Length: 243
Image (spheres, rainbow, N blue to C red):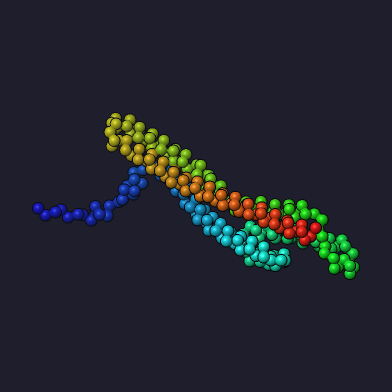
């Protein structure tokens, strides 16, 4: 007996996923669309934030090396303009601007004599520089944590959105039982399938967002500690040379 040829229709028929989408109700489709939106936006944030933090870490190491080797704040200020990604440059510029403003104010208060021209001017308010550094550090932390709240929202909300789809699918399954009067697997399978798919989709969106959020917050805490250490170094140098 010759084997039956396989028809082209069976080869090019719709996939099981396409069949599932075709048979899924509007409520399940809406839930899947919401979860897909959260997942896509979360992955875009994850990729962009990962690249950004890697660039920040690299520039921070370069800036710290130059800062510790340099002997003049003016040289560091020139270098800071070339490394705009690292928060340390913002801290340095804020502290340097406050220091320069206090030096200019002290110079304007002194009489313009030959003796005072050759004297090293001293600042009177080191706490003003400390406050400037603290304000800059807070602004930079806010900039680094931008969009991370969306990851936290995704991690917290998506499992519950998927759970809502699960409950709705089970309700559909019981409704199918009531309409058909049969408890066979054929009657309840579509509703159970929707329920399981929504649960899986909710977890698939939430788990990467949760892992990425915890990772990024850990990196930002390390960066905050680096900023605090740099602020102390800046204050020590300022106190040693200008007070």
